[in-house]
Image (cartoon, rainbow, N blue to C red; front, top):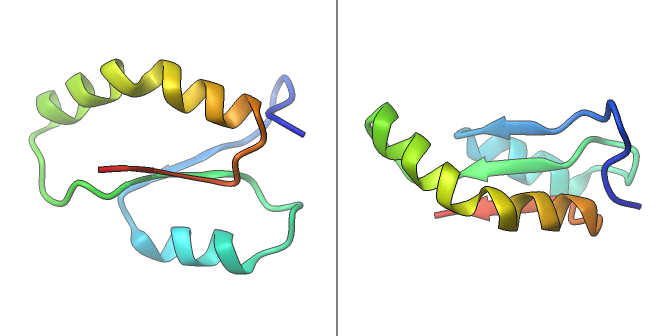
Length: 69
C-alpha cells in the first residue's frame, strides 16, 4: 500500500499510539514511534535526520508501525 501523496503519518513519542496502531484496522494511518525517552531536541533531530531515509522507505513499503530507538 505505502504512503500516497497527501497521506497522513503520526509521528509521536507516546507509546499508546504504537499499541493503538497494532490493534487498529489497516485504514488507520501509519505510526512512527520515537521510543527514545527524554531527549534534547537537537539530539532528536540529529537522530531523525540520520534515520529519515529508512523511515521513508518503510512507509513507502507499507509498514504500519516504525519504531525508532
